[in-house]
Each structure stands twice: as structure tokens, then as C-alpha cells.
Length: 401
Image 1 (cartoon, one colour):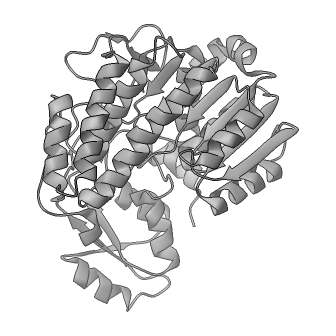
Image 2 (image 1 turned 45 degrees about the vertical axis):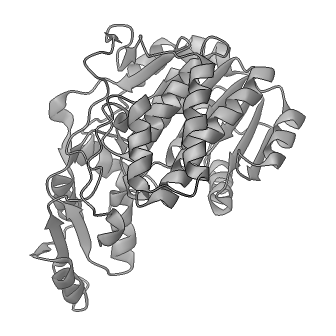
């Protein structure tokens, strides 16, 4: 098996050191002042980005760390990882809770452990594949929007020094419901940004993150299953380490209401097909290009330890799939000079909380009506998100290999 961190540096990001190294070094003293000795709450901390954020801030020695995630196994692995890493600082007060931040017990825990000086929320539906029908979309909006709003209401009574909520590049000119839900989440948190110190970040794909296409390659190889990959989609990428660092920088250094993104050039986008070819090249293994997923499955039955590996490259045809990435729109006021590695959107729309509540009430009434489908939810979202142009093909990633 290849060295994944080295593969990311050499073939995907093509950066020998972190994109954010200069800013972290430049603001090291300020980061220490803001984090050292503070109480930290991380929601969704067992995922790739959340756990990377935890490792980034632990370098500055907070006094207390509470981590919440619905993934009990993920929390176990996070703890084992932190406890097993040489020279890794872990505060004496460190505790993990397998629960949802939307549960009643979460509020009890939160109030018991308060005050929290730093709060970061990474709990989200993050995959375009979660867009299937009205039920999967309702669950997505419940997690990404309604629960976020309820948590902000809790924070109003227990204000942290810094609150960060992760967004996505797909919130810029969204074409899928996941991106639209994150854009609506941005609108929600911006409505509170005059009362709470809030920042967010849109960023690139995290290479080999949990549940990603690339992480799936490792699983497929272990199970001797064929590889399936879109040939026409390209993305910006950051490493898992970089994903945590951008969130830390945005959380600790941003002004309330700002949206951060990595400063990456158009030519730094990489095709998934190219990464796939490089993955096997780095593994010293040939690939056998197949013309269908069925052919790829059949070829996998004949796999030998050293023979060519069956790979099916296809043209993307699923709903909500954008062929390229963007971090901001033409109407955004962007500052590219403040940081070495980060751009900042300065003029995010800030609606009144009452307007946000009206929007969410409208959505909730639709979902409670029992008379709705995917299209009616999309049309409802378009009323509040004028730049939402949904791409509907009638196909879902659940229909793909």
C-alpha cells in the first residue's frame, strides 16, 4: 500500500509543505494567545476535518477539550490516535460524547461543561450523494440548517469567544441541494454574526477524507473490488492536515461574519481520472480500462496479486454535479491581500434573524405538510437563494458503482 500523505503531497496538492504554513507561522503568537488555556468544544470531531482541526488547535495547548460526534467508533479511533501519537499534547480535561448536537442531552452536557471559549461545528451532511428524494433532503436540511439554528440560539445565552461553522465550496452558485443547504446555513449564521463572533470557511475537497471517492479506493483494493471514477470532473484539493488548519485560522483570526477560502489558482484543479491513474502508478500496478461497471465487476473476479486492476472511467450524469469548483461569486467583495494563503469574503449577506426564521418556518411547514417531493423543496429553496440553479438529471450516485 502506498504512503497516502506522501501521495497527496506528490500527486494531488503538489505541495511539499502546508499551504497555510506561512500564515500559521506569522500568527503563531496570536493563535497561542487565543487558544492556550481555553475550553474548546468540537462538534463532529470524529470526521476527517473535525479531527484535523482538533490536531491543529492542540498544538497551542487548550485547557479543556470536549468532542461530540454521532460516530461512536470514530470517537474511539480519534482518542486512540491522539493517545498514540508521539509528542501529541492532550489536555488533562479531555472527554468524548457519542451524541447528536440536536439531542436534548446535548444541551444538558453543554451547560454542565460551560463556559466554552472556542466552539466549532463540523456536524453536517457533506455529500452530494445525500440528495436522493424528499426524505434524504429533509434529513440534510434538518442537520445542516435547523439544528445549526437551534444551536445558535443556545450560544446566544452562552456566548463563546469564537464560533466556527464549516461550509463548502458548493455553497458558491449552488447546483445541488447539499450546496444550497450549506448556503442557507451561511445565511443563518450570518444573521447571528452581530451577536456572536462567527466565521466560516469554504474549501476544497479533502484528499482521502472519510467517505470520499479516493478513500474508497483503499477499501476497494482491500476487498478486491473494481474502481469506478468520473473522467470529466476536476476539483481543488487540500490535505487532511490543511483542512484542519484553514478552519483553525478562520475560527481564530477572522472578524465576525467573514467567509474564508484557500487561495488556489484555476490550474491547481486536478481531474479525478488523473489522480486515479497516478494512484496506480505510485502503487506500481497497471490498470485495465473497462467500458462498463458490469465489465469491471466481471474482470475483478479474475484479479491476481500483480495483474492489471479493472477501472471504469465514466462521464458524470448525476443530479447536482458541477464539473468545476468556485469559492466565491461575482457579487462577493473579496480580500486577497490580508493573508498569504487565505482569501476572505467581506460582504456576506446578513439578514435579520426574523427573516431567517420566516424562511425556516416556510420550509418546516412544507415538510410537515406531507404533501411535498424533492422538486417542491428545491423550488422553496430557490425563493430564498436566488443563485441556486439546481441540476437535475434523475440519477443519483447511489445508482453508481
